[in-house]
Image (tube, rainbow, N blue to C red):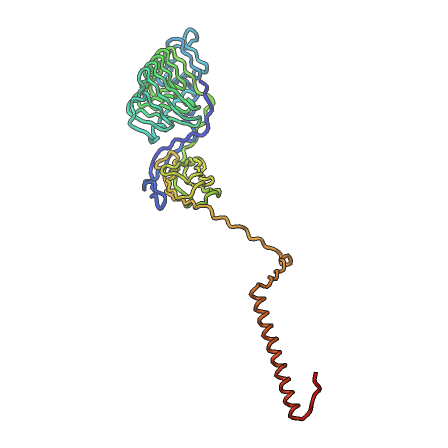
Length: 409
């Protein structure tokens, strides 16, 4: 299998600190925890180049092939690697030299570091049939049944650390399968006493045993067999040290997520909408709607936390948005978003320039107005005739009284 170079590795390990979820932050009023984040694999130091490293002896039977270095310290005995038909080392053999001494010192430190990690899952025993995401897994005696399968599902960034308080026993023809681009660079087995890998088993990872390691006939190992105080025993095995692994880095402290964004605004049907939920934490948290349904037309980006789109229906939606980054506890916020109906369209008012306004038209007189005018005119004419007649009568009386005569008309 090709070993792929991995980038950042993050293992969340719970510790303490406390934040009370307030207001809309309703992570069930749980306590936030600090975490140790390992940005890279367990630091093996000088032991990283060794496919096999023992303390007392290294013994091989049959045509084993070790693609990597073979060493022993403080013991001096390495047997069974004289080349075909015996074992073959595609690397360097170090017997109680300065390189092997340093490798043993670094192995001891790596075992201490791996054992100090707080498990994400504990109480394990038989791993057969499990599919495990990245994390730290612990138990008393760990095992995989004969013919059993353990699947490690992750990516090139994923790290697994297994802690066995006592022994590791891998049955014959058992298999460890890594998927999704995960790398054997990042699988570590910290064993309190001794480890045994069964006949024709297909094993993945670096065994860091406090005592001894035994690989039975035909077992293949993508990783390393490292014994801190005891012997390593091989029998017709193929051991391949992972290549192109990222270097380890110092662990850093971080906290679980905590919301930092404000309450989202309401929206309007047909008007584009956007609100981004944000939360602190390392690694950066992801977001999901864990209760309720977001308004129709809106979707939540799990990576950025942006709720966006164009609402398609009015109504009110109450949703729970949860942020998580692998460090307990996750945190949630409950929000209500009201989507209003679109406003009623009003015809636009056309503003016509003043000099362009047409003059008002005179309305023709109605029939009633014409009749009224005729009546008034008739009255005025009659009144005039009466005045003329009266005037003539007064003139005639005045002449008669004066004795004057007028010619007949």
